[in-house]
Length: 339
Image 1 (cartoon, helix red, strand yellow):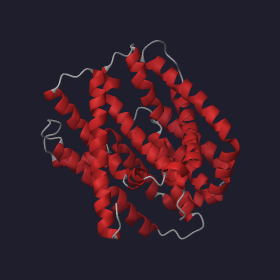
Image 2 (cartoon, rainbow, N blue to C red):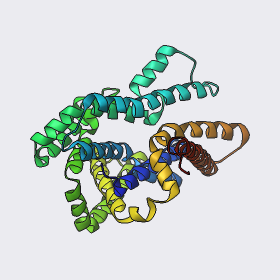
Image 3 (cartoon, one colour):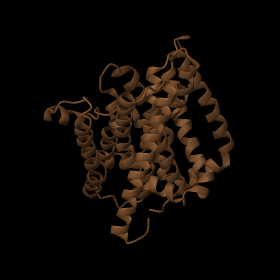
């Protein structure tokens, strides 16, 4: 499959947004919801929260670009996903479990650890892996249905299924957000984008100004209305559906950015490292935040602003140094190339 720079750009962009969400999370939960400081951290966090939807979309795009014309081997596909997705996920669950024991988060219980791995609820963002694996297991079905049904029919149906499942039929199910149906719309959109990729890119180039304008309007609407709700200023109904619209437009906006600016940055060394190590960064970066909070509580008397900067510094430096070094060593050993 031909490497597409705009997809690499979107992958890195979403990876950095995941880090931003978790860096901001402490301040979001600790600050007075009626304060301007809360608004200053909550709104960027909210507007970044299309990353899971974005990664699901990108994954579908990549695989449908690869398999739309055939050549799909289910057994080989699943083996590859086990090696690259599931095993690292299990490994990082184990690392978190034992690394957070000294901080008092866990007392060893094998049954508890297995349950965490199965449900994806040990660390806040691990649920993504549980969801994406469900989509992978059903890959033959997606390949079949996308060939049989036109996008004009299946995309709206998938949106209705997602809304009904997420907000009505199983809204009270505690693990609702770990079932693939809650994200099926984004996956189906990605399937069709991957199937008609060149046409989609041409469409993006033609209508990029409109995409940017709609994104700006959706961002203002979603950010402000959800802040009004969270701050208790006024109850606003339907924010979940507003957020669905925002997430959809935000994904299109990131892809549009990638089309126009990826050529300027994708060859930068740090960009390439983050792109190659994005999944490892996704899984690991929160561990640095747990230890940053522990060190801050033991050694410093930080206000929320200082703590936010400290968390950002520790998370970014440790994560990028660790995975930059790993990437360099791996490339030297496997490919006999420089970093």
